[in-house]
Amino acid sequence: MGVISTQAFAFKLIANGIQLDLFKEEDILVSNNVTGLFDIGVLPSEFTRQIHLPGTKKNNAFFENFFDVDTQSFAFNAIKKVYAQVLINDEAYFTGYMRLDKINIQNSKVEYDVSLYSTVGTLFADIGNKLLKDLNFDDSEYTFNH
Image (cartoon, rainbow, N blue to C red):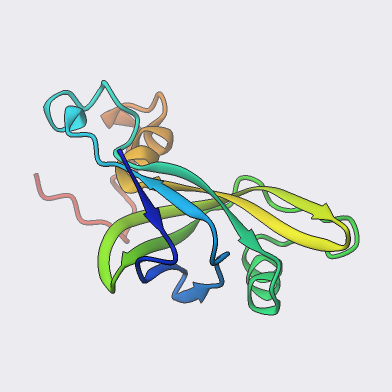
């Protein structure tokens, strides 16, 4: 596990194609654990991190739009997830999903706590207790050829 300083590297968070604003002084813990390559049941994901995002104009508009944030009550859709990418020096480090966990308000300043989950991590949540027989083979969106 290492620490990436947002000051030392060009760290970008892209969610649904929009580059979100980050705090300049926040360090982000990163790791890739290879245990999951050998036993996929051992780890729920290769990458799960919580980060804090500032309540800038761009971020506020993003969260209002994609997570249905109510600007009066600050209620939001907690089960919604959006496609997310983390770039370090313009190289893809992570691809997966982002969820909004919490909205913090202190001294009239808004901050968003979000969690990033790799696609492997969300695979287990998406499958749940379903079995192969639960697939909808009549769905025209998918072609099952195996």
